[in-house]
Amino acid sequence: LRNGVYRNFTHGVTWTKPEGFWRTSMGEEASAVDEFCMLLAEEAQSGLYVQWIVEDAGDFDGATFHQAVIANMFGEDHPVVGQAPESIKLNGATALMNDADLSIDGLMFTYRVATTIANGRGHQMIVWGWPGVMKQKKTQIDQAIAGFAFPGSSLVETVKALPTYRDNRVGFSVRLPGSGWTVNENMQPAMQPIGAVLQFQRQNQLIIIMALAAVELGQDISWASGAMTDIMGANFSQLTSSKPTTKQTTFAGIPWEVKTWKKDNETIHLAMGVRQRTIYAIAVSGADGTGKVVMDRITKGFRLLD
Image (cartoon, rainbow, N blue to C red; front, side, top):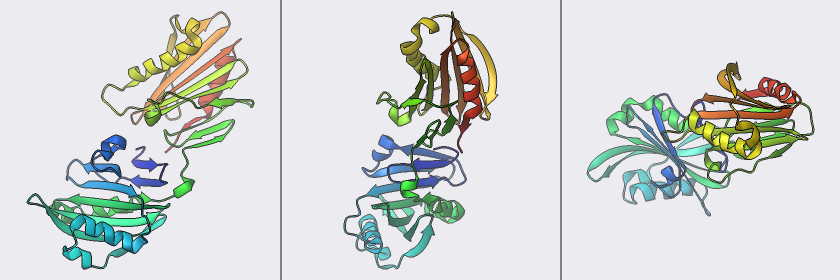
């Protein structure tokens, strides 16, 4: 979730959160609620919930898929099953929608259920809460459904057109100085769900860019610095064993701390910054002063995406 927008590159779907204070759950945390749940969001003040479920639509078309979802959710005997759904336009798809009340363990809730078939899959977009809250928060509920968009295959994780590299998942682009660079995107499987670690190499020059989303308590810039130090230690152990100089700077619209190690004619520069709980690190090595030249040009060509 970056700048209020959730992006799912596997299914080609985005969701822009409505106004309010939303807590979002994704991945394993969301699937613990429902096997096919991709996203679960709760608005802290009102208690509204938003859920996005993706499943195989089989032989259903849009109308029969919606009917099946409604019947399964509310029961065949519920009055909503016989009601005609409202057709609504979303960005990239047309959805069918019904509102209905449902009693669960003696407690009454109001649900808004919208469904569509897009990108070859069946999608359920569900908003629910207490009946009084659902009436009071109509604008938020409308925004929650309208916030779903279906760009499909045009939503890509990365664009590699060296010397420019763009990562839409963790939110940055960089233009490397000159030409002749190769990129290595291999990283530890444990880090893959929360970020990216990239190595760009050209002759005796190396650039490492890391972006990690802090998703748990304790995952701060010190934690990310430790991860980056481990990566750097594997490549520059002789240099990073010495004490660096440190300075503060600003680029890409955020403050950064820059550390510099020097030994003989080798230098390493490490810049670290944070935006919206995503920690970014850029490390550059080079001999005969080239490291500083490359670092200066990297910082000018580094952008954070909206």
